[in-house]
Length: 237
Image (tube, rainbow, N blue to C red; front, top):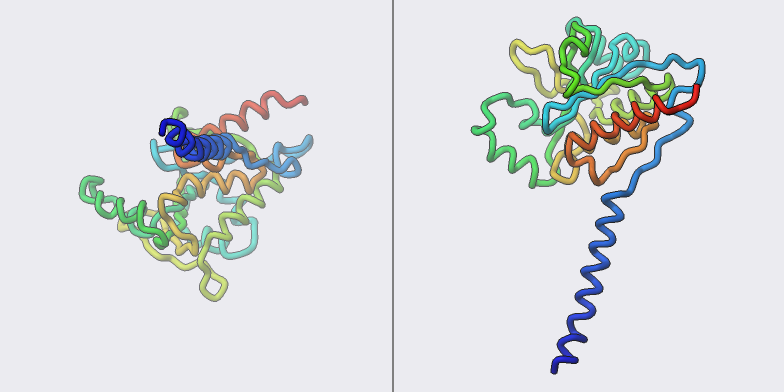
């Protein structure tokens, strides 16, 4: 009897060990960057960008002039924003992300956004008139430079998130007294695809290596930028 019980448990133990091994591999797996895009080659001054962390959500901050120098619906949307030399860019659930009422009042909607697949999403474009270094403390900000080609790839990836109507970005929401505009996105928000996953994907499009399965948290996305800074500092002149 004991032998039979041990034999019956063996396949279960093997399956459990295999599952742990797969999860460990996914947790440590790094999606490679693109050396043709990052780091900037010698002679390429690059374009400065910033990554912000509010504790659970990440936003990118890109120079308005570089975005407006492009063609296409993203550049057109940026040109229509109120004044500001820098553009905060973020992505999230079409309702929960826009709503600024007390978080305690929004917990049921937060549960809906997390656990119901297929939620509508929006892309935020928010102009800032001051330098990000003056607006955001260093402990919640990482600054680094992308190559010109890396910035273009990043902007194109952001643009690809837009749900266009007749080739143009369409405003899905705006807030009273707020310069931010929320444009419809064709992507879906849920626990398997959060704002930080989106930010990590944007960084990867710019050529940076990322750890996709760890990008659930804003801390992991910030760690991507930190590794970028360290690698850039260690690169030979």
